[in-house]
Length: 77
Ligand SMILES: [Zn+2]
Image (tube, rainbow, N blue to C red; front, side, top):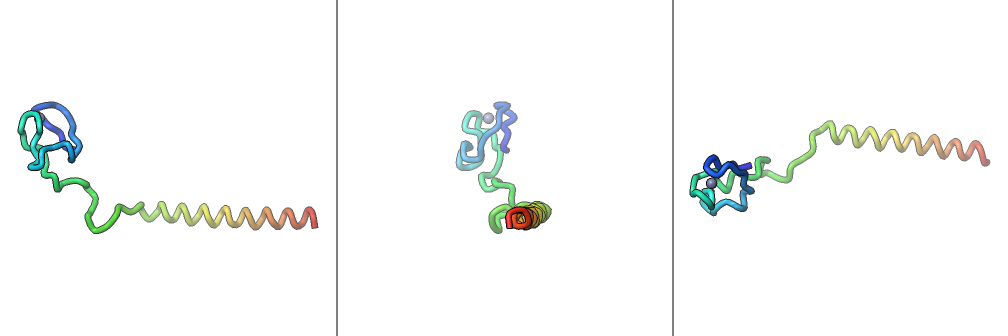
């Protein structure tokens, strides 16, 4: 997040002048190319343990569904 020391305020990258200077005091803040922080080789990805959590939840809920179906079959059939 670009910060102007002269004006004591944050700026969105798009609200800076095209050369990266503050539109109010002219102080250089940041290159417009500095944002976003993520690598530019594709969209940002969630960490691997996020996908591990998703897989674990799907496996668990699938197993609970199997158990529920078995319980229903045992009760009503
Ligand atoms: Zn400024």
